[in-house]
Length: 334
Image 1 (cartoon, rainbow, N blue to C red):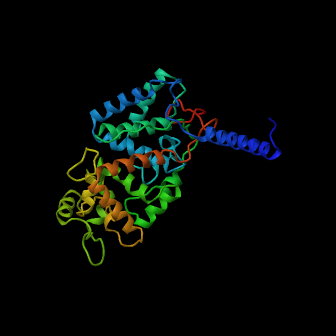
Image 2: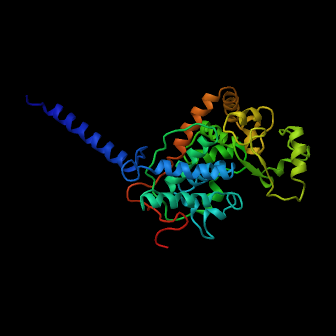
Image 3: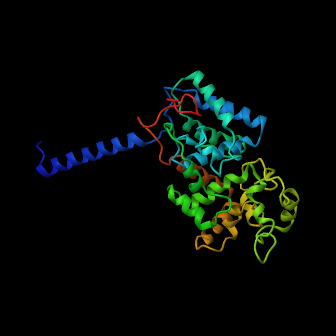
């Protein structure tokens, strides 16, 4: 039966739209089965190396999770945080003497390369290692979208200006998340990653002494906790000493972090402001999320995994963009 001109045009238009969607999606979309043929054992290889690292040092799970976070917020998830060099992101303020786990990433890369050389990107290794770090710390698992390629340049300025800092007010934190396409729910859910790991005195000592003209210490910090921290981190003391981000639940990935915020036991001011902040209309939104996650661990797990997938999809290099680094610390042309 012969089509009318209108029906023929609609059919052609539909085919064109479908082809356009396929082209755009195929060019940029990450997939959970990206290495199913080219490197089918990559997930088990990464898991084994992360497991070894956490067995040697429990804190490493938090460190690997943080590396993925600090990678994705600068240039997108392209492995740029791993690059060596004086102008690298490693030497930016938020990472200097703080970001760690680079040797573990090296070990993972070596193991992956021995199985399938030149196939798996360092950016994807970071994404898988972050997921495994959460899982091996008692948290959830999820299918990691893969297919990222590695960037060719680091961005130290981007790290200094774009990464959320422990001293940032809530409005600034929300703005930095929004700049990479993440919303207020993502802010609170991803902050829940602080349920594991440690922080240095230098990142919270501002809350302990001479906090304001009216207070020697931050009034939103529990008084007993303040006293403990003042002993650990005296004035002019060692700023590199560490303590648990999630007091009384240091190594277990759970919702205890949010329960701590509700009783003024958030370690960093950027943590506690999610519950106690009053300088932004958004604080009421973040406070309600803190309360919801504290009382409903399943809601936290759901939102956290969704936010991790969303964060891991920030501006990935795909197709012929970037490269697959042979060594995560240097670009291939070096």
